Length: 96
Image (cartoon, rainbow, N blue to C red; front, side, top):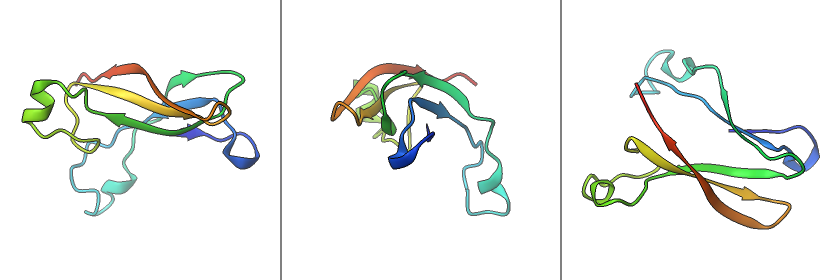
């Protein structure tokens, strides 16, 4: 998630939040998200379109991992809107 702080979706922070429910369409599951945690802050930049993607390891490929079905590690992509660049500078490792 990006934090918007001005017009035209301006914001320099990206956050992550989790929902443990596999079926978000059931009951109140879609409302049960964890408190967002800061992932990235890039002062002076405008960050858009955050996305977690698989690492494309042989294991990820064999397990047909996608942005909706990630493994233990994932790449974080986002766009520097002010630079016109979409990059992956970080990896995220998940723990239960």
